[in-house]
Length: 316
Image 1: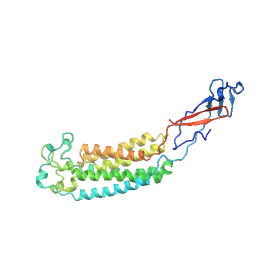
Image 2: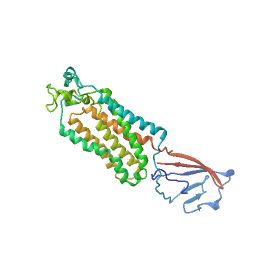
Image 3: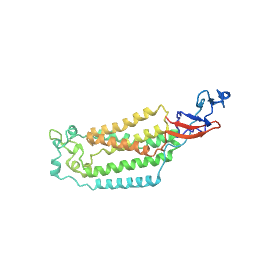
Image 4: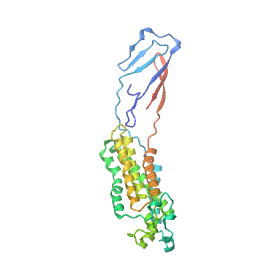
């Protein structure tokens, strides 16, 4: 019976199997078979017009089959394209010209959408410094968790390819969006009272490098790395009690980075929200689209000495 009910994808499954049998040649059931035990796992009951095979005492065993499948014809071009587009976006940001004095004069709180106006003129160097350690540490999370967790370690090669793809896509989206949008950072603007941040001189406010607030790249990259870690950990450890804590950590780290980037005056609130959403979506969807497709329901013809029927298997 174990050959009829294989385990797949390292997930313990519950299989509900019922064999519907039509008695051959419309004969009446043989009473001599009533309640006959064929073996320790199967009981044939012929008291009914149809025979029913009841399965009991099934024991399932974990397998190490991977839930992921790479498609090199798609993955290689996506990774190469993402890296190339990221490099292009970085160059376009570096080539952005400085604001003229007249353009800088227009950077006032009144010219900021109402939902972001509260942070116009903000600047906090300490908050900016605090945002970097968790941002940088997030890049190591998939590598570290992948090594420490046995199930992930067995799939490490595929995970690293998917992780590279995740970050290539994230980088391409952020750098090119920022270079095209050209939104100034909050500290470039004056506050509602018309005052600029005293710690920032005019030349720094005018710098073309500071016209890339939309959307928040640090927040997006952090979310991509942490949510990728949570998604792959959950897929490879479906029964682990640690899953909830991994997801909480995945959500909390980029939220903290985004808060610090906002407080530092590097990004508006909307920049961080969008960066968070884009990064989280990329971190989840890349592994999701690499998952092996498994059919939950299968129907297989079955035939025996005195019956014909169907084996129905459903994976929950």
